[in-house]
Length: 153
Image 1 (cartoon, rainbow, N blue to C red):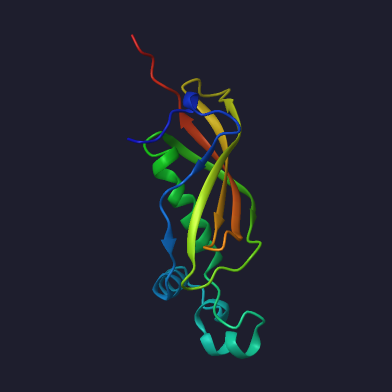
Image 2: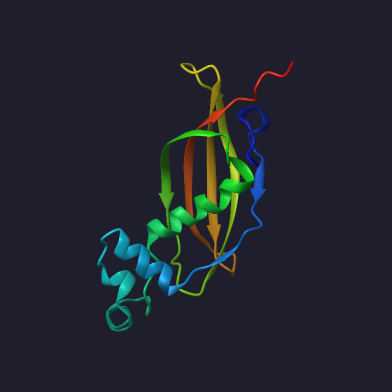
């Protein structure tokens, strides 16, 4: 377990995750197919070349969202998450394309003890994903029910 307990976080702390990931066409097509998303926006090169302002397929935004959250887990909440409570303020301010390399940072933006579960606390983490040019491509806030540190004798 490499995740932190609720009590070990502090508001304002920023994690700059070492894992980087270059996204591939296989990622995009497979994810879009698995989620039954046939939008030409993601899987049709000719359509995107001739009928869009982008000139090439965009990475599926739900893949991008999952990737930025997933990259954060090992450094923050691995083994200490009870449940994800929800996502909010999800935005994709710039496109992500095949061949781009994503890097992520996570900031602790809020925390409070759970009122109904004394062994847990609730964190709000803001995950920010950037491409290789440091352009923000995805951002979200994730509310997480976390384990509190066990009592130590």
